[in-house]
Image 1 (cartoon, rainbow, N blue to C red):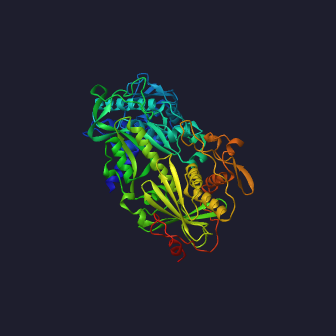
Image 2: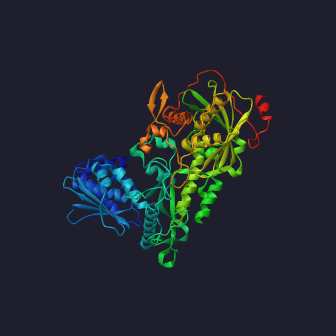
Image 3: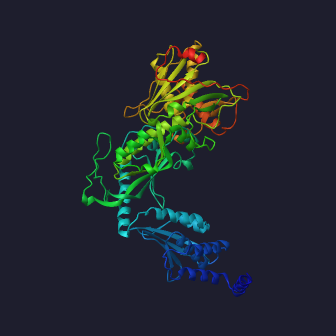
Length: 604
C-alpha cells in the first residue's frame, strides 16, 4: 500500500509542471501505439474526451484535437492539411472538410458524400461555431448510418447508388399530376399524395415521407412544425441475410406512361438495371405504428419480403394503443378485462367509453408495433403508404376513446358507449340516450383512410340523411367522442319534437369524389365568440360562403371539434364533474344483432 502511494506521488511530481498540451500529446501517443486490436482504446478515448470537455477551445490546435477525438468516437479517420488550416474527417463513403481560423474558430464546414463534390453545410457549421460538439457527433453518427451495410467498399457503393436511384424515382412519382382533394397543398400531399409529402435527405437525415396527419394535429401545428407533425417514414437501406435485386438505374422511363390509377408504368428490372445485394430498402416508421395482424400480412403481400417475426411483439390491439399513448399508467399488460375510459368534452360534457376485453382478445384482432418495413422496388411505396394510412385512420378513431381519465366516484357521464370490434376495419359504438328506453348502435366502417361510412341503428331512425350527416362529421373530425356528441344532440332534437335541419349536399372534388367540408369560422366559449384555431394554416377560407355550406347543426358539431382540441387537449387533467355519483358502464355481449330484449337487459 505504501509503495502504491509513493508511485502515485512520483507521477504527480513528474507531471506537475507539464502543460495541458503535453498531456494531450501523451494520451494521443498512447492511443497511436501499435496494438493487436485495431479498434481504438476506449479508456484512452474517454480520458481524452474528458480532458477536452474540461477546457475551452481557444486555439486552432485545440479545435483540431477536439475534432480528432469526435472522429475516433465515430470510427472515422482525421488529419490536418499541410497548411494546418483544414481538418479532414474521413470515412469510407464520405468526408468532411472543416476550415479553421488561427484562433480556433470555424470558417466553413463542407460535406462530400460518395461521388459528389464537397458542399457547404450551414447546420454543421453552426454546431461547431456554437461548440455543440455532442450534437455534431450525433450528426456524424447519422451520416455513418446511411452506409450501415456489411461488406467491402464496392458493396457499399452499389447499395448507396441503389438508394440514390430509388430517391429519384420516388421524386418523379411524387410530381405526377393528380386531382386535389384538400384545400391546402401540403395537407393534400400528406393524406392523398402517391408518395405523401416528400422531404429530400440531407446531412445524415434520410429522405423523409410524411404520410398521415390527423385533423387535431392540423389544427394545433404551427408553421414551424409542419414537417414534423403526424406519421413519418424514413427511406433507408438495411442489411439482410439473403440477397435482393435492387435497382442500379431509374426504372421510370421518360416521359412516364401512366396506368389507370395514375401510377407510372415501370421498366422491367433486368440485369443491366439492377444488382444482387445483401441489403433491402426500408421504410422506418416514426413513431412505430400499431398494426393489426391482417395489415402486417398485407405488407408482406405487397413487397414479397417478410417482416421478421422476431421483430414483432404481438399483443391485444388496445394494449398497443394504450402503450403508445402512455395512457395505462405504466402498466404494459392487458389482463383481458374491460378497459374503461372517461372522455371530457367542451361544455362540461363527459362521455364514458368501454372496450370489452373478451371482444378485443380475439386472435384476429391482435397486433404489433411495426417500426421497419422492407421493400425492393419503388412501385411498392404507394401501395404501402395507402395501407399505412388505412391503419392510421383506424388507430386515430380508437385513440380518440382512450384517455388518462378512469372511472372514479364523482363524474356523471352524459353518454355511455361501448366500442366493439366488428372486423379488422369496422367497429360499432353502442350507446343509450337518456330519454330513450332502447339501445342504439352506430356502425363505423373504414374502407380506407378516405372512405369512412356510418350506419345508425336506432328505434325510429330510418333517415338515410342521418347516416350521411354522421359520416361527414366523423370524416372531418376523426374522433368518435366528437361524432357521438354531434349525433346525441341531433337525436335529442328529434326526440324533443324539434324539426331537424336538412343535411347539406355533398361537395365534390374535380374527380367526383366527396371533398372534406370546411370547418366553421368561429365557436362560442365562455360567452365569447372566438375564431377557430388553425383554419388559415390549413388553407380553409374563412368566409361567409364557406360557413353557408353547412347547416347550423353541422357547424355546431364541428365547433365541438374545435373546442375539444383547443380546450380539452390542452388541459386534460381538469375534472369538470366534482359530484359524488358513480359512473355506470354498459356491458353487452354482442352488438351485431340488436333485439328488442336489449332494453330490458339494460334496465336490469
